[in-house]
Length: 587
Ligand SMILES: Cc1cc2nc3c(=O)[nH]c(=O)nc-3n(C[C@H](O)[C@H](O)[C@H](O)COP(=O)(O)OP(=O)(O)OC[C@H]3O[C@@H](n4cnc5c(N)ncnc54)[C@H](O)[C@@H]3O)c2cc1C
Image 1 (cartoon, rainbow, N blue to C red):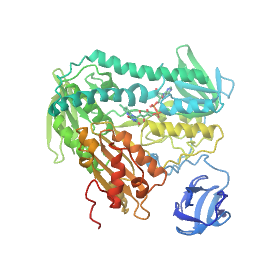
Image 2: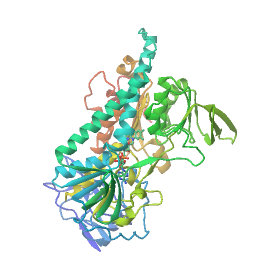
Image 3: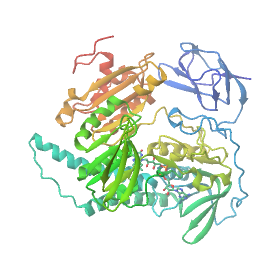
Image 4: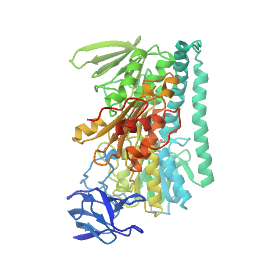
């Protein structure tokens, strides 16, 4: 048993507790937040000084506490284990990896001793995506010698080379096409643009090159050594890299695994046919097919459908679930569905693709709808965008003693540490959501922990964005999630039809929704659909991280006329102080 007392919290006494963040029976790691306090100056989370299981909670919301007050009793207390090994506790949004992993850890191979290989560094980072290069750069800035291993000759990973960046370049082109087309009904008639596919592709490739070239320069300036080749662990302190100059052994004191993910392939689809592509193939823009089938109505599938439709393809999207962009609330997705139903050939919901035959005259795709009825259609191209698979198993992590789940994820604790003390993992390979900004954040956490800083992943939310037209963005608690969990929420919704700026942009179909905790009116979630929603959601994310409530948002002066005002207005809709619309009736 261990008494957990309130540590030194600065010059404060009798501070009210606004939330107790754990329950009796919870397993807690050192640094996990236990209670939240609110002084007149700030809110602060009190981290656990040690790991253990919560046996008794001695305080409740509304109590006031001062330094030294007993707040909890732990059993099985494990002093000083802070962050090492366990790997079970993860923030809610990263919960894709197994919660409880009792499987025995693999035994590390004998490998090469640190310092006795061809190259050695304090820290080796395996994989140079947004997670990997961020971790490498941050650790170098903090004084470590760093080697970054990447199989491809350009660094930047999926995000820069075949993900976020090229897709956004093409989405920008798509937006220009549809915007100019739509302006014709507002008195500005453009001719249909001529699409010079080679030039468009070169421009997109140029954007990627500029960014990856910039990264290479930054690596040089930081003296981060890049080793090009496929790397596999050969022991707990060594990685064997297949380089153009043969096999090289790189040894390390500490390592960060950032190997990312790869597209999922389906067994009944002939993926070797060149007319069937994954997101990488779709981004190559080899042609503009007449008829295209997009399998998967998630973010990647729908973004690519947006691009190809604008370029002139007749696109059919097929999604197994009852809505596109599963994960976002239905009301938020509706304006996008409504607009795209008009532009796409069709959006087939609750429909499965059960067979694909590669024929000379095209791809024969068979669908099965919710009633079990089958139908077939011919297409010239098919994009398979049904998800991504983590690459944890592909780098022989088990030879370093690192546990990899059956699905290929590597389980980490809140400091990004694997079950092996000196090996960390970040990005897509550690769990959902597979997003670049999550990888970057985790990369910084891991690098700082490697360098001895007191750091943990304690972000409250990770925003998600579909850069479709309109964009759809959400973060924190969704209405759907609250309903499933039986959690009470309040909401404030502002329709963009009442936004002067949205009307002036000719795009008033959007909506901004804020979700509040009924206990204290704090913002706990938000979702936006409309042009630039991906940029606008950051204000909601900041509000949640800062513990802001409806009044904070409503009383923040937003510039007029902007779309950002819609966040302010959604808070006012909830407060009943809105004047640009009639306030909703009090329930
Ligand atoms: C089409 C598309 C669009 C996307 N758009 C967005 C977006 O707009 N916003 C967003 O947040 N996210 C987006 N994503 C997701 C985002 O790209 C990923 O979440 C992000 O790249 C993950 O970063 P990472 O560092 O974990 O790994 P990755 O970016 O996957 O990088 C891993 C790197 O490790 C290398 N590697 C793997 N194994 C080895 C090995 N054994 N030896 C040597 N090197 C190895 C790989 O070659 C790769 O370069 C998109 C993804 C796709 C496919």
